[in-house]
Image 1: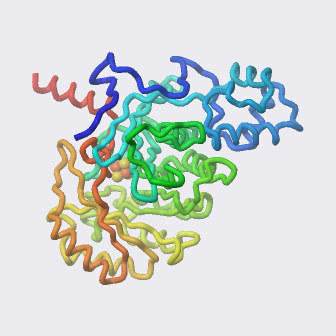
Image 2: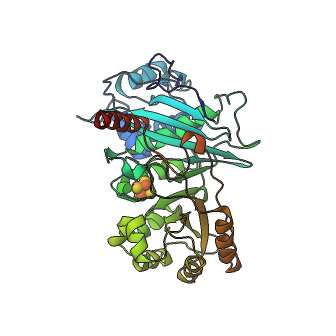
Image 3: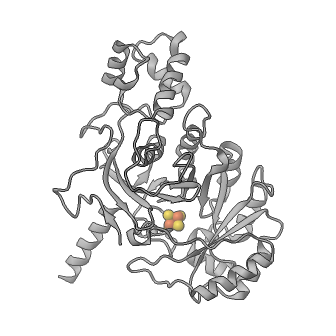
Length: 406
Ligand code: SF4
């Protein structure tokens, strides 16, 4: 059963989980999070910092923002007070609002974050999930609010696409998660929290939350380059994985310009079935997708592509499917992740039986592929793979259902 700390929509009087700082409604100050070093320098120029200081000042800010994780200019003690004040008057480094934080019995945490409206838009909400394991803490980050794609096994796919997240909003998910689990020097790990026993608490980032990251390429690229910068958040590119449903034209660029690990939501070995499960397949079919994978920059046995395969009872889980999967991936340095299907209200599929999953896995293993069966995490709080959907969207659906029933 989930421990719900604060679900504002269920309980309007519930206290909001304290963030280090929060934006005032309607506040329009431009954000500094998500700017690269050059852009930071230029931003400083707009408040009168002489150009010859831009590099040094940008490095100072970078350290405070990404190494120390501060969200208030007042904490930047090696920057003169009058400059701190000017920065505060003109820019924001505040965290977005935490609408809710849910903690699963297995220690998985799911947050609902609310971001300010952009332009004439409304505030938007996205979910981010933290999965602690022995020796690693994986953060599943969203790239869009909703999704334009309609993968039929995925709950997010039923949510209307609202907009792309900015680089700032993508990074904010990482910063806030690190605040909440105590992964910055001055942050505290909540008592009783399940986290890796030593080392960093957020060790891996997977772009597998809401949305198709390659439909928001520039913002995702910018955010991931900042996240992997060695003088800042310093996440190794080998510990950042971008998962795509198969946006073939952007796959080469992902390896070439971002250099992170790649995961493919494959889920079927025949085009007729993949057309249904992952409809983008009608645009770029399995053959085109695998061609792009073969050409992924840096691909080697040490840098394998992960193929995600959700196990759907009676749909894609036969021994023949397993053999065809092995045949299809021949020659591609690959790992296969078997994902027991995580049901959600209204979903039309069932999870394959455990014996079936094991037999499938055995066939794939015998062919030489490591094929871990991904243990479902955070199911009790709808945080598992394919279950993300913002709480407000769930509420809207409930309201719609109530109206229809009435
Ligand atoms: S699996 Fe990914 S791409 Fe497909 S609908 Fe869900 S969020 Fe969108």
